[in-house]
Structure formats: structure tokens, C-alpha cells
Image 1 (cartoon, rainbow, N blue to C red):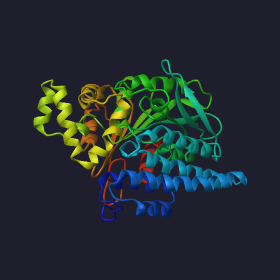
Image 2 (cartoon, rainbow, N blue to C red; image 1 turned 60 degrees about the vertical axis):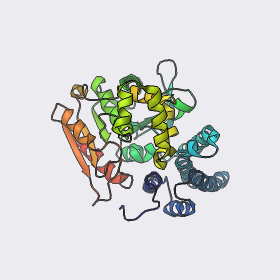
Image 3 (tube, one colour; image 1 turned 180 degrees about the horizontal axis):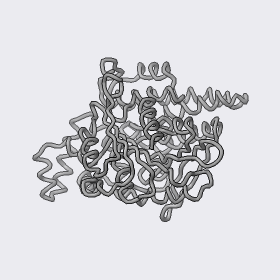
Image 4 (cartoon, one colour; image 1 turned 60 degrees about the horizontal axis):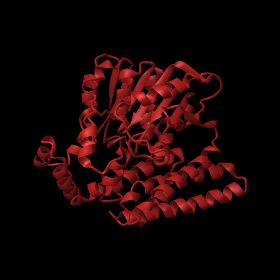
Length: 396
């Protein structure tokens, strides 16, 4: 798979593959992805944003015309692609020459997504979940009449909620499951509209989601599964260590220590400053160093945004609490963990998590380069991932 590339830039390449991987779920049209990537200047964030938004607006124009003509299926599919392309553009908006476009872009993405959901072929309900002083917002996808098993889809650190369609919602409904996708603190609506930031104790987020599901007449209460991708490979096991009403968890990939995706980029002498408590000098030198690495520099603002601080040292102090080493043994439900080849962000940690879980009802599932299923969250193999995860759930 890696011999066929859109970009030399690793960040651009990864996001292009994620976008293309959504094609089986009507999130993308293969030709539109290729044509858009052909227009983008490699490594240029303004070019990335402008070209993906140009495609998004063109496709949204088709959707508007289809909606006006009463062609709901065509409108649904094109609104969905427009939303997804805007989400792809949005990832790098903070690294463009005009980062002030961030909120407007996110809102436009969500408007397109909502327009698609209003025309969805199976029932989709916009929901609010009671959470502390500010409700969380999400979507409930019905798997059919009567009570159904339900999967909670927990997003990672930086993807739009539209990603949850290919991360389990569509595959769940096709198998007669309900699916619930939501924005937790630091994600989507919770971040951009309500100013809620990430937290390490994710059980405080998931317990209200489970409480909400238990109020619904269409949920089998002892068949609630929690599934998480990317940084949710930490949040999901963390929640399961404390919230024992979950029937099983799906983890893609396993993340034991979130901080390593940051600290692995810093030389030992810089980390010595941090360990010595010299946060000011650490921030100065870390920022200077990151500016010399284009990929890291382009994503720095995006990575920092959901933590609510502009200090790298402050984030690392916070991330010291994002660690499953002492709590993974408290997980009592069955666990499915992906283990993709060439994991970029948390290499080796799927195996570490597997080893830390003390019970035997667990599986570590390889995804290989030979299958075209390598890289973080298997961007080009979402159907294979879903098949393996849901077939495992069916055996429980």
C-alpha cells in the first residue's frame, strides 16, 4: 500500500488515505479524492485547506440542487461527502494563513452532516446527554424495531464526528445494532461550542452516556459495547476500568501512555529540562525545535487546542495522568484490541495493553501491510476492521 502515494508529506498522506477509505461508506467519491489531491501542493496547508473546501463547496452545490428537486438520496450522499471533505480540510485550518476560519468551517461541516442525517435511510436521532453542567451532543442510529444491542462510538483527539460512520455506525446498523456517536469534552460541539476540554478520567464521560442509554426503550441494557479509535484507545479502556456495565470494549489501537506520542519527538536533553521542572525553558526550546520539523509544526496548534493551553509543558504534565499502567487490570469485560503494522503514534502499545489486562477474555488482532490494513486505525481497511470486530462481538 505504501508504494502508491498521494504525498511525500506523511501527515497529508495519512489524511488523504483516511478520506479515501471512507468511499465504501459514501463519505467520499474515489475520483473526487484523486482530483482534489492532484491540485494540492505537497506540504502546503493553505493549499490543502483551499482545495478540499473547493471540492466540499462544489459537492454541496450538487446537494442543494438535489434537495430542491426532491432527490433525497442524491442530496443525502452529496451532503455527506461535502461534510467529510470539509472535515478533511478542517484538520489543517489552524496551520493556514487565516486560522480564524476554524469555527465557521467546523459549523459548515456540521450543517452538511446534519443535512445528510436528516435524509438517512434508517432512523437517526440528534440527542443530548446530561453531563455535569453542560450536556453532550450526539447522534443515535437505530438498528431496527424493538430492543437492540448498542455500540457507543468514542472518537479520538482530532477527527470529525462524520468519521464515526466508517468507524462503526453504518456497520453496526447493518448488523442490527444501534450506534451512538457523541462529542465528548475536547471534541466537536463540546469543544467549539461549549469550551469543554479533554480530561483523563474518561469514566466521568462514559458513565453519563451509559446512564442515558439505560433510559431508552430500544436498548438491550446488558449489551452495551464501547468502541474507540485513535486516542480513544486510551479513553475506552480507562472508562472500562471503572464503568463495569459495559458488555465489551473495542480498542483501535491500544494506548497505554498517551504522552509518548508527544515525548518521542523530543531529544533526551530537552526532556531533562522538563523532568527538572524548568517548564519555561522547556517550552521555549520545544517550540523552536518543533518549528524545524514541518509535520510537527503544522499540527502543533491542532494537537494543543483540545487541552485548552498554549504550553507544551502544561500538556505534558496533564498527559502524565493519561496512563493505564495502574488501572488496566481493573477491566473486567471482554476486550478486542487492534494491532496494526506500522503504527505511527503509539507503536507497541496495543501489545502492552493486552499484557496489562489481567483476565483471559481478550484478543489482540493483527492488521498487516500485506492486507493493505497497516497504519494507525487502518485507514484503508475500515470494512475489514468492522468485520473482525463485529464478528467477535457476535460470539460473546
